[in-house]
Length: 270
Length: 183
Image 1 (spheres, each protein chain N blue to C red):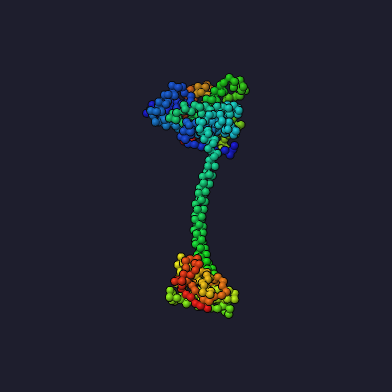
Image 2: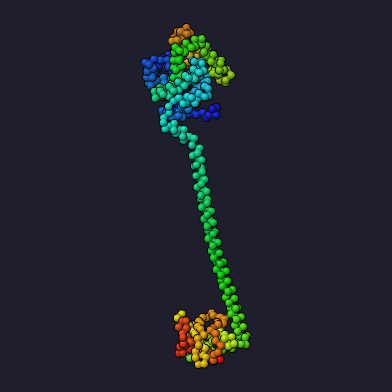
């Protein structure tokens, strides 16, 4: 240990740090430092002291020298690119990162809003449909009443008109309970059936009732009509000025040239 | 330029970056050590322009010979300081330098630089005054001769007309004083 102490105190370590030793001497110091922690430690202390001393006396060089010196050495290729290209774009990258995040948030919010609006729209559509259908119902009702009113007015006019003769057609054996009232105006050659008071079995899709006038013993076609539960009003038939009786037969849809007598439903003479 | 952010790295980070020859290593190297190295160079070679060239040469040498740096043998700073010193000493010993600056009295270089720059051992700077007071004049002169003027210890012994052993002892005592102050 005494030897080590003497070695340290010889001043050789200071000269080593300053770089004053020959190659052989340097190797010797390095061997000693590797062998003895005390030597290694002493070297570190000397370095620290001189570093402090040099730092204290630092003189900053001219500022423009930095650029010049930085340009005077060669950097590893990809590093130069990495520094020159990625460093300035770093701000941009963060910007796009945040912009992207913001876009995603806006997109999600938009989706939510859109979904909400869509739901409301659907609700509104349903409400509108309900309103439309009720509106339609009222309109239908109004139309129905209008028609009933018009029919009643027409019927009233016919009934109140003294020129009209009311001819009651009573049921035959084919349909004893049936009855029809025919209004006949010989002056104006007007023949009408009172659909409201008509009492006939409903005809099917293939058949229709046909009204005949008996003129001098011959049947004359006055047109066809249907029996439906809800039919109202006066139905105008073909014109005729002279007739002794009316009769209704059940014929094929569209009517026949001559009546099928065995299917006579009602008849009545004037 | 003054707004340029100075880069600082730990010595380990810096060494790794230097091995990879990354630009950031050179930037950090410059920002961390250019003033210290310049301080050494300009005390040995007081002409601004030459000192700047030498500083550049020093950095290029550090950069290019970095693979030969062995961190197990000492600190990066010591290694770089010695490169700066060697570059500067080579310069003042070169023929063209001696021919061009015959009238420059080397002995007064340190004082000249310090007076002119009004930096370094400036009593007005807190702490440095203590240091100057703690270093005995003979310790400071041997330290400056060897460290800042590029004298070998043999040359310093001749210059100061003292035995070689005394140079070594004084140098050691000076550094021990510094150690007490800095460590």
